Image (cartoon, rainbow, N blue to C red; front, side):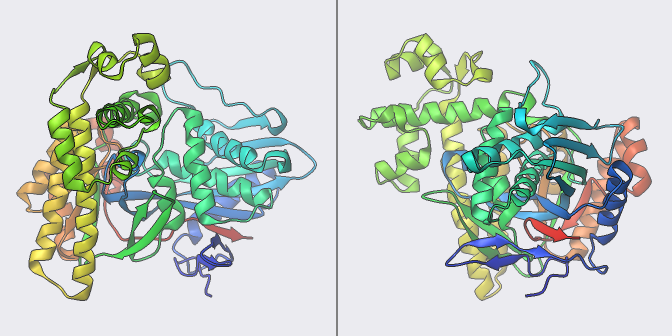
Length: 492
């Protein structure tokens, strides 16, 4: 097994089907070597000693399958090169956590005693950056139970995953904390288990994650997207993307923090209410306990087409009121609030159950078709097949804009330019701003497309954004990307 830090040899098998995060030695020829050395120097400046190990956890871009993971359906993301990096050393004689960020001016340092770990969230606005890290520590603490040791840690943090852009910067931070803490605690680094812990513990900052971001952060592989299934258990299958295709990520620079806004959780709530509504209609005695569309699909033994018909026949209104839902489910308004709404969705008065349900079921169908076409193209190239992939991406975006209502005017400007360039593109990530992902026919086509985006979109940014991004020719906000490896751990 090679371990050169260039994306080879990050996976090591232990027993049947258990993939662990291998300890590697970072080599000078690695693409991340200089960045890591800069972080190591910062660590030494802060703490007066060398770190013991380095953690790298990538961001991700989801090619297709948006807002379906928390409903139990599969997705097709790939890991990107943009990552969160940690330099870590433990304090065996001390229970103090010391967190320092390379961008000190933006992210102030944070100290805490791990014997009394608490995550305090603000009443308004998004969580402080270090709270994402504390989520990961708490996730391992709860997983280990009585085996947990409050071993202090000194940690320096760096990252180049754009914030609030739909490339999963927050989940990469949580996942990096999980991996670092697990290693310090001497826990076996099973990728699937760590991904599951990472997904679960993001709830501590109020985000009901479906698990896609954490799964690809650990399971990513060079050259492949991953078809990630969550039901009946977490499973990642590498999917070879069509030869010659190049993916471009373009950041609209319109930001929305999932944990600071209720929009994301409102969609989760609407999907869960729609599931229960339909489960009750189907006469399932345990309808209250069925919260994911995939569980309803399984209980009723429906295929995708049958499920779509069920939605269209039974969720006939475009807007449902609290009274509508209480009447259908046979609950009081107080029960609706306490049983079915989360803390930051109790203000909701209108519920778009039909639109949300249709998006999820149709999008899950698009994921299955996308994977099938990719597998067919791997056997032999086909212009028609490649064209169908582009059409699926366009359909996905239209559904996210119209049925899920999670686009943004700036995103729509990027999509319009993409259409003019005859490039298939869609919003990726939670939405409400953030990034689009586009599929180009070749590296040369991607270069031309990027030039068009710089000319027609980025050159017209407001002055404060131009001053920030133009000096490096917008290379951090629009770039071609290839699928990369998942989480890596380097020993010094």
